[in-house]
Amino acid sequence: MSRDLDIVRARIYAVTPANTPPYRWTGQDGFVRITDNLLRLTAANGLEGWASNTSNAPHDDGAGAPERSAADRLHEIAPQVLGASALEREAVSERLLRTCDDPRRRAESLIDIALWDLMARAANQPLWQMLGGVRDVIPAYASTPVLETVEAYVAYVGDLAERGYRAAKLHTQCDPDWDLAMIDAVHDAHGKRMRFMLDVEQRYDLRTSVRVGQRLAELEFVWFEAPLPDADFVAYRELRRAVDVPIIPAGNTLTSLEDLRSGIEGGAWDHVRTGPSHNGGLTASIRAMGLADAHGMTVELQSYGYEGRKLAALHLALGLGNCDWFEQPVAETDYNYELAEPPVVDASGLIHAPTGPGLGAVPDWERIEAEAFLTFDLKD
Image (tube, rainbow, N blue to C red):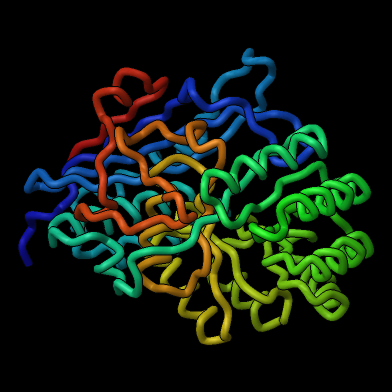
């Protein structure tokens, strides 16, 4: 076997981009600062593959240290990929996941994605085509921030509609009375031209989930995301019996194929949610999507974050096809950092396949080198 694609260098970066404001997942949460973690693998022939993912730390009015655990974890395990070949990417992934004791699997995921990117670049082929090439375009939904007032949501969603979005996922206060008032107001204002999802980040109990879910069914929401803790399969089954809106999990707490199989076969969800940046990478995601497809379910992929995370999910969705929507965080500029020309949603609410090899784009490494607060360099 040619050793041209043997990994001879791994370079790791952690950056806190200045354009990304502090974020919170619900109205009940404190704000966090976002770290962009990037992995850059170099092969013996000079080709490179890359991947990225977010992590976060409490905002603390800017006084606390930035989050570095994901980069530290990459530094710990990346030596295991040195000397391995991108041709052996699935064997590398299997070995890393077999010994992984981190349920978030972020570092293992980035190694797998970067190896796939490198392999597709060596083939001079876009990754979505290498994965199967089922389609070259997919509708996007705007994944909103948490806003303070009902009126703010109505105005914000109206702006999204004017810019071409035809669907929006609402992140909200997670107070059921407040949430229902907001949902009704937004749907009354924009329901004739947009579709909606609701994500409450596992913050409801079963009784509240039934109450809100019944209203979402009346308004024909596309799905109800993470109403309950992902692993509470019994409560999820009860919820599905009580409401007629599709139910999906959060997707970032149950990350292994075994966990997903338990939820699917236990009747917990109508469809699956997971993401290649935390479940073990593209290799693990391909298996998860095959499992879901065998049960007649889609896999709605997580891609909330910077361009590397979005691209990995986009290539999977286009390549395998078992995904109905692409998640686009808004405001878009908050998570545009790595690329000079990030992927964009067009005026019809669609996002198109990248045309370049691999992930389809290369980060601005010079800028990242200059702005990283943490860098590790490993060589074979």
